[in-house]
Length: 180
Image 1 (cartoon, rainbow, N blue to C red):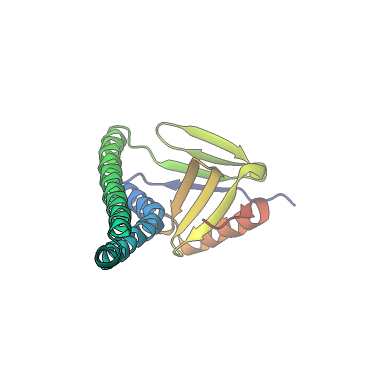
Image 2: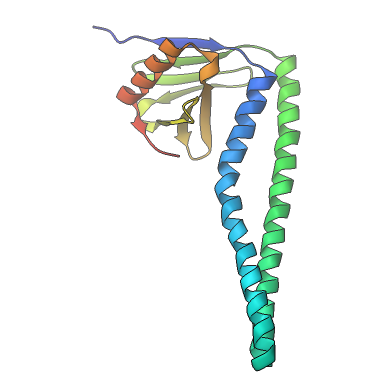
């Protein structure tokens, strides 16, 4: 018995591209921002401790005040980096959308017994199954990873429920599950 070959043509759309990229950006930065909020806690803690210590041991008070100022500067710097990265994403996304409108071709997703293929207007990739991992994000996005820097996101909205489930079953048999 030969295995089924799954092929999908999904539309290129500005809305889906924006949605997926914004989701990916938020997913990556969400934990980082939560960790950065701990710096704010440490800032308040050390500044309160510095105020208390200034009355008893002045030199320790200055030390803790310095630690508090260090943590607030780390917090502010991290927020600044976040804003710059968000602006950079929006600039790159606007450029990508402009290119997308100029070269609007459907995206081809192909799942065969020997490889996974992804083709859009600017690239055509084929990968052996040994290099691929996948996971399901928010029960809406199929997140296929090939390397730490290359991933593909298939939105459930682009294909019907039955084919989406077939694709997940295909990935279960051919690749390995890896939580993101």
